[in-house]
Image (tube, rainbow, N blue to C red; front, top):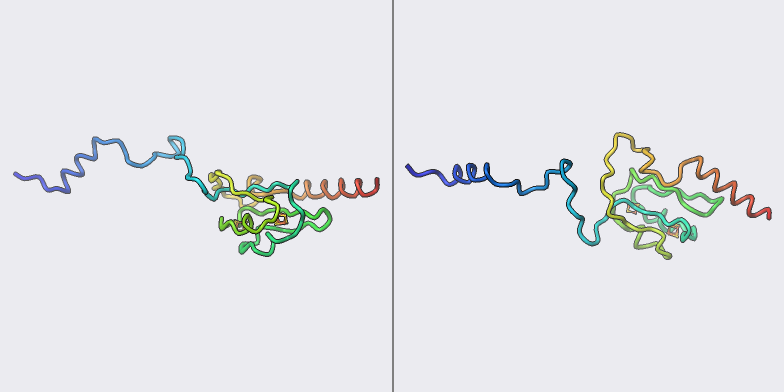
Length: 131
Ligand code: SF4
Ligand code: SF4
């Protein structure tokens, strides 16, 4: 009797290693060059021009006028990279990090500067201006 081709493929696959990566049981596969992962903000480079605030379609950036920096709500990011391309001083960069799933969109991993940190930055700026 002739075995149908589909059945022979099914039976053959029972004894082969899986073609896909069994993540999270194994390490994730390496990301390709140019991958758009979690946004990184180099605050020291930032000149407070607000171009990122203007171009971001998802409302990720919030300008902090007292210190002329931005705070980021990364849970809103759609990874379009427009902010990276527009920043005149390369203060923004897309990293390889992609394990960002969480039940809390305000997770610490998805914030760049929380309220306490912003207050501290403003205090330090005021102190520096008084000197
Ligand atoms: S990558 Fe796109 S969505 Fe994400 S912060 Fe930048 S401009 Fe906004
Ligand atoms: S575009 Fe760059 S320099 Fe301008 S506010 Fe955004 S991060 Fe700072």
